[in-house]
Amino acid sequence: MSVVYLVFLPQFVDPSIGHVPAQLFASGLVLLLIGLCGDLVIGAAAGHVGLLLRRHSGMGRLINRIAGTVYGALAVHLAIRE
Image 1 (spheres, rainbow, N blue to C red):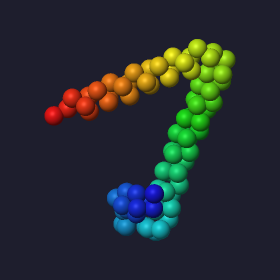
Image 2 (cartoon, helix red, strand yellow; image 1 turned 180 degrees about the horizontal axis):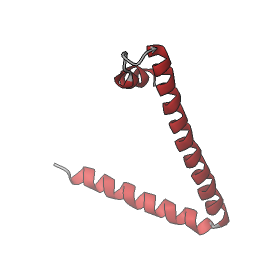
Image 3 (cartoon, helix red, strand yellow; image 1 turned 120 degrees about the vertical axis):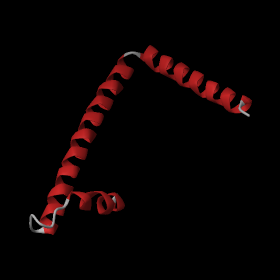
């Protein structure tokens, strides 16, 4: 992650505006808050999906069958691929 910050954030710093470290800090903070919001949404959605799967055991079996079919299709694709 530090490499991403070191490569990505300096593109948005304008030395003519003023204090460069403050601009880097503000940009990093904004990026951190955006990531936090995305992680919170994913966590909340995962919690709801988990509750749904616990309530309906058939859903879990359906998902397992779909995953097995996808993995099997990928295996066949790899086997016949030139």
